[in-house]
Image (tube, rainbow, N blue to C red):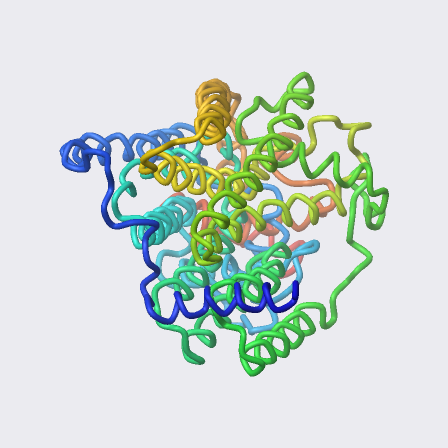
Length: 503
């Protein structure tokens, strides 16, 4: 009997999906005054631009026109090989620590060929991709619930363009995270927008392949595709078989010739294998999830953990409520997938970094570059909260527990809104990742040969000789940091190469 009930529930959801290919809203007629809401559209639209403007200001103030950290080990060689005509597909898909950042590498190759790898353009690409991601988010929510989509524009913009993820705005290598999210959103957008068919599923799978080769965390795309597609009605055996085979093949290719020796890190930064303690894994993951609303300091670790737990609890509460009221998986599928990506990202990061949490580095899960991944729990949660509140306020006879549901949702959102302002204001005024002095060090290096000032622009696993060679190459070829420069470096570099051989 239980099995029959579950099957009938799934069949009903599939029939609803078939009858309404564009995904029916919870209701097309809202009892609230939509005219008044739409009159605020220009104001809300302008307010949604504020986070984007703040990010552009931050990039203008703190962005530097030089490679940084892992760029020297991966992107600089990509640019060098592109310039010399020796770049191969193997270079594009080459492993960078535990990631394969094919699209970040491809972008570097394209910019090298078209702009002599203007690094400022590379950084602005992060914002451009984020704009696409924001547009996809708004499009999906508007398609599902057109009556109140405007209310989510500002929260979506605030999360997508938060300064709390500052590293991922000004570091070229971190373009890989924005690509990962873009392909995830394109996969979900495809499943939502187009009618259920084999072609739609193939297109969604193509975006999942692209997601896989953007970062290690892109591997999460396959279970997300499988579950989300099932929730949206792709339950025929041939659909399930296709996704399973495609996922196995793609994951197999990802790990072909993969160097597992670099997995994990201890407190010295050396590879140490995966963390397997389940308690520490869970603790790390929930702390990771709350990072979007806290300051990156030790004393905020507990608060971040609390936020993560509360966020997960509300996610399940609202998803359960909507599923019970609408009896349609399609209502919650997209937003649960986005939240699940954050949870999965936290767990994968915990597997590799859990050894140093909570000791010796308590705030490690709060790193600003992780906020790009953790923010999507809150995107999914806020979307579900908006759908829940819309459903509750349309009810003619609201019960006490529905009224309590409103309070339980609204109160934490107010707290998170305040903490968002605090955390992002704090991040905006932090010391830049790279100073003007360090940028000048690189620009003057071909003449002054001062290696001491280079210390903080690359990580300790990169040989200094590789950094020196990269700087000299950029100066000689007028590429990268030296694109458009007309300073007379040729004679100095040529004399230098007499002693050490050609670059």
